[in-house]
Amino acid sequence: MMNKPRLKEFYKKDVMSGLVKQFGFKNVHQIPKMDKIVINVGLSEVKENIKVLDVAIADLAAITGQKPLICRAKQSVSNFKIRQGMPIGIKVTLRGAIMYEFLDRLINIAIPRIRDFRGIDLRGFDGYGNFNLGLAEQYIFPEINIDKSDKARGMNITFVTTAKKDEHAKTLLKMFGMPFKKEVVSN
Image 1 (cartoon, one colour):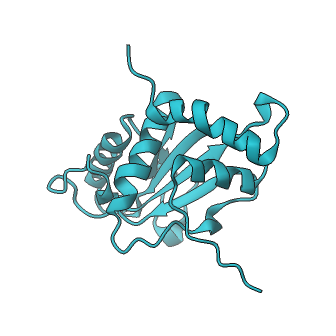
Image 2: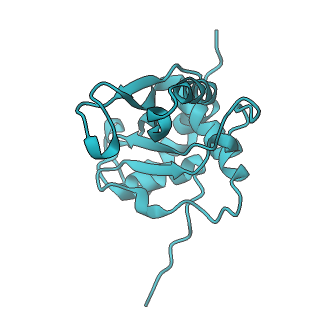
């Protein structure tokens, strides 16, 4: 039997009551929660070297603990030298316990390892309670073996919440410990 993720327990004990206190939700189902986390890695260099795909899959699988899905081009684009059906990226969708474990490792281990970190930009919210975060390199995760990885590859991480407003989602992520930039209030 696997232990429950630390952040899931924290959500049930502290975050839910804090959100109810702050926003006055009347029903338990109104309280925002994490729905899923989607991690995308674009692989433009696959056109020249198909072995890049195997290295990127191994890296993302080590980070997430789940085998990535290969995304293929839906149509040919001659300007980008892409044929229909060519692999152009990989993605992983995390839900449940694995999602909370990844979120915990991202906030407490990976983000503090970013060089010259000044906080996560608040412009990543989409207006529907979801948040997008772009990372420049995968080496901030301790699971990556730098000797086996060929180059620094960026990734996009999308946090999908059940929140209806960005303000609710921002508060949810802040309560989990997401280090956002301080908001500058102008007069």
